[in-house]
Image (cartoon, rainbow, N blue to C red):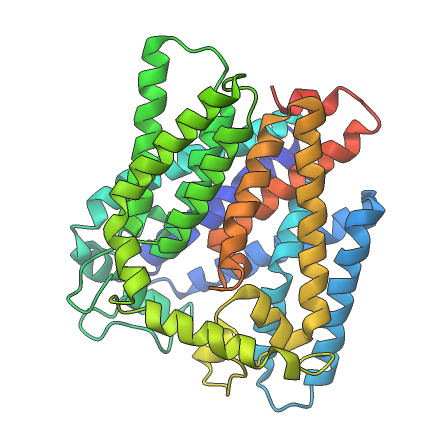
Length: 435
C-alpha cells in the first residue's frame, strides 16, 4: 500500500470517527490533550493540499475557478482584519470556507489509480455500515452519550459549543427531532446530520460498486446492506440526506447502463426505489411541507432573508466571520439569514466568490458525466449524482462547508478528477475506474 493511500484511508477514518474516539478519551476533562487531535488533522490536510498545488498538474478548467475562489475569500479576509471580528472567528470562518477546496486537493493528490478509488469507497461503505448499526442502538441509549463518554462536556470544552445545547441533557439540539426529546441516531460520527449524509453517500457508492452479475445470495446480502443504510438515514432524521440520497440513488439507477441496458427496466427500478423511500418518509415530507415540525419554519425564514439581502452584498462581501456557525457560536452580529453554504460564502466574501465555487462545481459535474458516457466509469457517474443530490443543501444548510458531512464527497470528487486527468495520458484509466 502506498503512503498516499494509507494517509487517505487514515484521514477518512479520522474524519468520521474522530469526535467519537476523542470524546471517549476526553472523559469530561481527564485527557485535555485530546483537543489537539483536530488541529493535527487539519494541519495534515493543509499540508497535503499545498503539496498537491505544488507538485500536481491540474487542468485549467478546474484551476481557474478554484484560484478565483481562493483569491476572493483571501481578499475578503484581508479587508476583514479591521472589522473587529475576533481573530479566532476570522481564522475559523476562513478555514470553513476553504473546506471544499482543501479536501478536493487532498483527494486529487492521494488518488493515483483506480485501486485507490476502490479502497476509498470500501472504507467509506464499511464505516457507514458500522455507524448505521451503532446508530440503531444509540438512538435508544441517550445515557451512553451523557454518562458513558460525557459527550456534552467534550462539545462545550473542546469543540467550543456555547449555544445549541438541549438544556436537560446538554447534547446538541440536533440529537433530537422535537421538544419531546425524540432521539435521532448519531452513530459513530456522533452527529445526526453528518450521519445521514454519510450513509446516503455510502448507499449510492455501494450500488455503483456492485458487479453486474451476482448470485441470488449476493443479491440478498447486497440488498440487506443497502436497506440497512437507508434505514440508518431515516433514523438520523436528516431531511437533507433523505432528499439528496433519493435524488442521487434514483438518478444513478436511471442513467447507469451497467445495471440494466433496457431503459424501461432502469425506469422501473428507479420508480420502485422512489416509491419505497416515499412511503418510508411520508410523515417527514408532510411535516416539512406543512411546516408543523420545529425547524422547517426557521429554514424557510432564513432562506427568504438570504434572498432578500443578496443584491445588497458588497463586491467582497461583508467580511469573513460575519456569517456561519463559528460566528453564531461567538455571538457575532450576522448578516443575511444564516444557513446555506452558497449564502454563507456570498455574504462573507461576495457573490463572485459564490459564483466561482458554483462554476467549479459545474465543471466537475460536466467532466464526471462525460467520463461515464464515454467510458462507462461507474464511480464517476455515482459521484456525479451525489454532487447533484447534495447540491440541494447549498441553499438550505452549511453542510457542504462541514468536514464530517461533506469531506467524503470532496475527497471522492478530487480523486475522480485526478483519474480523469491521468486518463488523458493513459486512455484506459477511466475505464479502469469503472471496473
